Amino acid sequence: MASKGLQDLKQQVQGAAQEAVTAAGASAQQVVDQATEAGQKAMEQVAKSTQETIDKTANQASETFSGLGKKLGFM
Image 1 (spheres, rainbow, N blue to C red):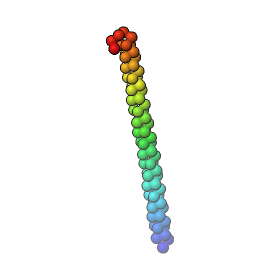
Image 2 (image 1 turned 30 degrees about the vertical axis):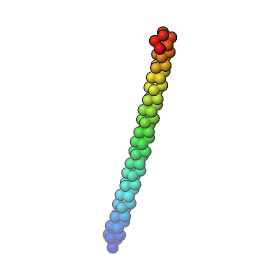
Image 3 (image 1 turned 60 degrees about the horizontal axis):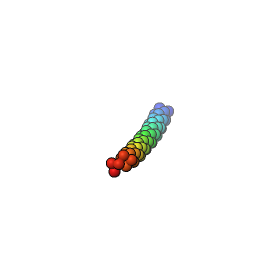
Image 4 (image 1 turned 180 degrees about the horizontal axis):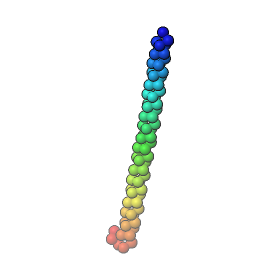
């Protein structure tokens, strides 16, 4: 009977260990998912900021050339 008790205990320990591994894996995956999402949001922000800078620069250049054309009498 002692052998049966030890076998049951061994199975319980193995089950608990497997649950712990599964929970740790799920937690690790959640961290990876959150990091991926944060990285994607950061890249979207960089792209948006870069596009805004390009747009502002293009507008400034257009205004500068327009003003220059008016001063030189082309417009």
